[in-house]
Length: 239
Ligand code: UDP
Image 1: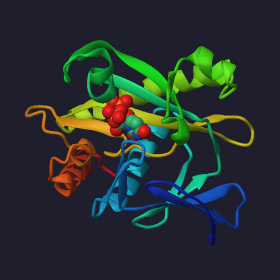
Image 2: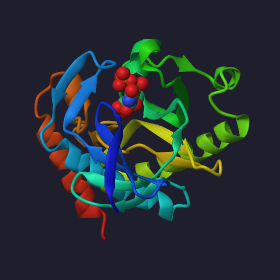
Image 3: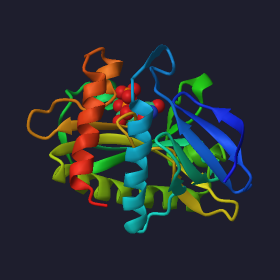
């Protein structure tokens, strides 16, 4: 597999073309941003952790019948993925109140919901990723109703698998963001990453934050939190 020219550089990853037109290489960076790019920094070793964690979790999703873009880990920071066109929706599932939910509705963080919630935002940095519902998504032709149905079904299925796995690691899955892509034949697959950058993960007993909120909120111990969460994953994820 030959790594050809870069086709895209995002906030945390670079994407490269390969000699197979259907496969891309994702290269994870240590760069971290928050608040729509207003806060910038680096988290040493994050790219390696996010790459390896995402891949292990993607394999779990595949085993649970959720199709993903994952093909093969190539190196510490590089992964071969299927080329998809990203559906411009950020899909957020929440099990407990936190972050923008707590702020928007004026509630404290840490309220445990009876059932998980789902919300969408329009993936558009210029607009600040505005919240929208499925009718807005249809009106804007961001996806079809069949695609939105598949996305919702997969997102809740991801939550079931992830929540159960993190519970084994003594970690509470508070909330997370997913992105989905479309294969050339139109199939919806889980894409992007599942990492401490995109999930809120709290120690089940102490409620210590083991995710990017430590960076967003200048709490310190960011690298240690990423290392700790990866250590717990490796201890419970037998090869
Ligand atoms: N999230 C993300 N990228 C975004 C926005 C949110 O990965 O652009 C994740 C975030 O890490 C958290 C969940 O989605 O796990 C819910 O985030 P929230 O809507 O509370 O936004 P925030 O408080 O992070 O602005």
